[in-house]
Length: 440
Image 1 (cartoon, rainbow, N blue to C red):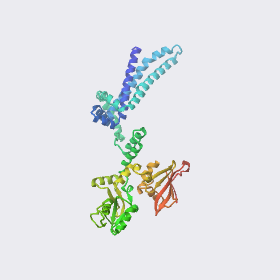
Image 2: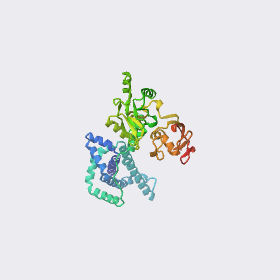
Image 3: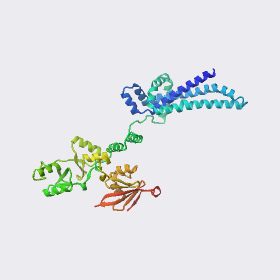
Image 4: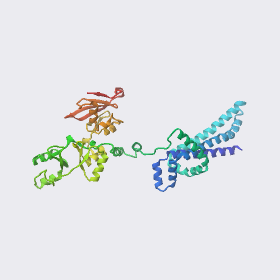
């Protein structure tokens, strides 16, 4: 054959190799979410690509048969196509055995370079850039190849499956979408500017609602404002003036004996009408919903939605009131800093290396703010104050500190045995001990 004939054959082999290379990468890189969207829009090619992704054995067998066959044929044709011409070109400078060896090596290098560049690198990078489009373009011809080469596919694919069974290797890919996958997509969207950082934070909080207990969002027992059945009208007015709320618990002699709740608007109507206020009036005091402290934020929100309530008492297994939670509390847990005025923010940055934190700040918010992957045994506590108490193994006092993950957590304010505020400081790497350090 002439040089032109050999060159045409080489180009055809490169084209075939491009087809197999692009098909292989496109099928592997094609996003199922995008393909399912295209399928729902009526593109039957997306259905075919999804089918091949579910059963990739036959597809990859055809690809490997094609690539290896083309590579072998390219080497054979290339050597005979280019070696004589290179030999004739170099004959003016070289002679003897060096001429033959050099001609062969240069011919081999030329053919290999053409296949690496044109038949491998360029098509694969194009397929990575547009995986779904390339996969749907080539899926038809690829399915024809699978049918034509079915005997070879059956033999090689069956042999590979036999080897996998012998060594008990799992070949099925797990395509289940996890929360980590969703977080990664949101991070990528935020970095690309598609998703606002605030939106990303809110969406992460929505997913975390299934793991965060309702106690992280409630108003704790020691901060509750409540009435006793024995309170006089003047005492009721004083409590309303000192602690204005929309709803108040009504208890009999002690907090844990809950009778119901009273709405502040009803009390206002009574005062406007000049009627006497009596907490024993059943028209004034209504029943209150009670939820266990083991519920998550997500479960609590479902409870509020189904019962059409916006206020509930949180009780523990001993029937003791541990706090109250409202629909707004759950909303704040999702919206985070968006729904809080600046004066109520639980984490305030003093500078780039230090923060002031309320003791009741949920530990998951601390992890996010400081980019800490985990706290030790964090199933034992819910707030940063709980972390300090757990690590110190005592009731914290001022100046007690714990060093963890490159940060120093120091108690700066205690109110009646309650950790009210902490100072968190980032420590230089050379100052960070190898193990967690506790100072009290």
